[in-house]
Structure formats: C-alpha cells, structure tokens
Length: 441
Image (cartoon, rainbow, N blue to C red):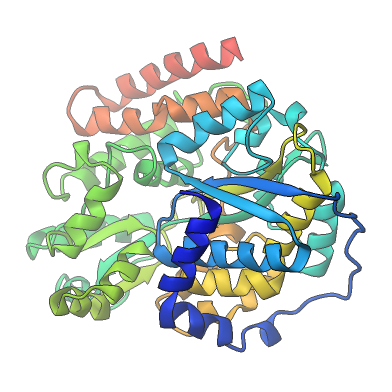
C-alpha cells in the first residue's frame, strides 16, 4: 500500500482513541533539557522511503503514519511508509543493505544493524542530542545502537512481556499477589492447574518463546560468556532445565507447538489463566465488541517477570532500531525524520495510541502519563530499562543473531519438556550447536 493511501486510512480510521491521545496533556509531564538540535539542512527535492514492522496493535501504525504526515507537511518531504511482517522485514532489510538500494530508513529488528554496520550512516550527533535532551539512554540500547563505540542506529522502542494473568483465578489458586520469585512462580502455576485454569507458555515460536531466556539467565547462566565463548553446558543450565520441566507439568496441553498467536487466543478464550505477553492481550480485550471478552479485560492483571536465583530482572525485549542507509540520496532528511519521530510531540502520542506496547529507550519518557493512567499499563514501563540484550552475556553480531534464529535456547528447553532429552543431554546438545555457529563467525 502506498504512503498516500496509508495516510488516507489513518485520517479515516484514527478515531477517538488517537484523538484523545493527541489531546492528552502528557507533554507537560516530560522532563526535557534545553538542548539545541544539530543543524541538518534538508536536501532540495528530498523524498524518503521508510520500511517498518507491521502493526502489533492498531494504534502503533496509525499514529506512526499520522506523525509521518505531520513531518511531510512541516518539511515539504514526501515520505512513503511500507510495513512488513516480522518474517519479511528482516530479509528485505538485508537485501537493501547488500544491493545498496531500496528504503532510505528502516526500523530494523534487534541486532540487525550490527550485521551491516558498514552500510549505515553514522548517527552519533542525533543519538547524543536525544540522550542529552531526554534524560539518557537505557543500557540495553548500546548493544543494538552502537558499533565500536559509534552510534549506527537509533533505538526507537522495545516491546516486552509481563506476566498476564486472570486475577480472580490467581486468587482462587490461593494467591492475593502475583509471586515475585521463581519458587512462587512455580507454586502459582501448580495452584492454577489444580483449580482448572492452567498456565500456558509458548515453546514453538522464537518470539513468545523468549520467556525461556528469562529462565536461563535467571539461574545466572547464558549461551555464551563475556568473551563469546559458548558456556551453556553447565550445572546452572541443568538446574534451570529441571525447573522449567516442573513448570511444564502444570501447563495446558499443546504448548510445545504453540506459535506467537497461540497464547493470546487461549487466554482470550478462557482456556488459560496465565501466560507471558506484551500488552496486546489487554488491548484486544478492552477493544473487543464481545461483552464477554471485554469482561476479561477487567480481570486481567499484569506483573513483572519473577526473579530467579541470580537476584535481578532477566528479561529481554524486542527492539526496533532506526537506521539510515548510506545509499540514500537524502541523509539529512532521513536524520530529521528520525529526530522528529523521537521528539515528545510525536513520541508521547505514539506511545499512548499503542497503550504502551512500545516501551521507550530514553529515561524522560518514564513520565509519559500512559504508564499511570491505567495501573495495568505500569508493569510495561520498565521493559527497556531492565532489558538484557539477546546476545547476553556476549556481544551482538552475526553469531548471536544466528544462534537466536536457530532457536538453540528455546529448543533446549522444549526437548526436555517433550521428554526427548534429559537436562544434561539437552545442555550438551545446545553447547554443540552453538559452538558450530560461533566457530563460523
């Protein structure tokens, strides 16, 4: 769909939700420093093509496109925005990098900018400006946005999961508050199973299967160490695998084959009482035309992931990073576009229209009222502040990206839960698979 057609859809479909977000007095709450933006004279006759992920919640894409229209009107630059699915965005980004043509700006997934850093326009001045104005960047952003201490990408936001549960069912299972540690997490899963409202966590998709990273890192283990040596075959990993095997006994049948949409559907159908997900389940329930589904929204609770023996949060986040390709004829226009979209006048309404699906990478946006206007939003506020990179404890790059795409950690857990391997065998197999990848890198 062309940019002009998409903008027409935005104007027709944005509706009261986005209108309320744009009118909300959220800008006054954002603590900003008085910092002068870099001077990037926009090239004469500039136009931009932008590639971004397809929406996960409707307000995300609608507000992004509305903000793009505002940019076009202010700068006189025609901008075409194309949205691609998770599966298609990565290969199309790689093709653009390798052939040197295509979109000028891409909102790229996770470590992808690290894979073609030499094809990207440096963005140090933009990153420094945004960091100074908006309270500084959260630590995880440097893993995705920086290469050899230079900014090659601007982290736009991160989507992360919390525990999503039915409050009444958790109470029925004997818990007034959601547990905050691994032993309590196992206990609540066992309690929910006993009262006929089991938990369900995906094993068949790398996206929603990312909860297994929390289980591994929570035992102070990881696929690699700080020097990128593969170290996953160790006693702490075996402990974690045994723990997740106990969790799995409480899950609804079928989770070994669950894909990303599966837990959403099961939760909204009332089949499970607990899962891990972004705010999209709550969003879907609140906006449903079915009164029964809207009633579920009232009963939904959100809580931070439990903390393992390591004693600190160990979650990841799905991060999108704005990059500018060197093949663009209009690098200054592209820089201005990314700056414009990160400024509070655009960023605050975008977060609000997404009801917090995209968490911010800059500390000042903690003050966005979206995080407190509904207490159920608040647990998502710290997703980026606490996030660990998917390359943890090692460095981002081709090997880390390949190991993730290969699903090594996720399959290690699923093989144990499926009864195909003992914890010791699964850890040893994960070690062998990861070593093959890291030797080739």
